[in-house]
Length: 147
Image (cartoon, rainbow, N blue to C red):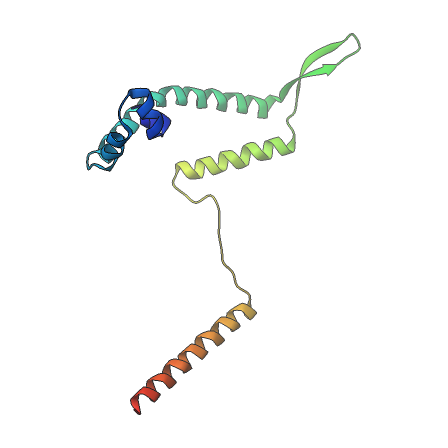
């Protein structure tokens, strides 16, 4: 359990009094992956309710700020006063972008697009190289057949 939390065999050895070589042997054993997954799953089950409450609370706060603005200390004639000030476009954009990405992740959908577009000159050069290698292979086969 200590190793699963700290991720260090050396720290685990010192904290638990188990020889480091024993821990290395255990980690290489066939039962280690299954036990590790079981511990991870148990810990995740312990943390899920609390994390869900935190996320729900944070979402409520974000929705409130988006609808009513941030609470700011604003200078007034008699002194200062707390007022709701609309959030900036930059902050709203960040909220939207991060929320969108997290939603896509939760649905197991991609969050970015990667392409390897090549321009025509690069493609042309690649085709030339392929053709050169092809001709070389054909010539080599013919040459070896004549011997």
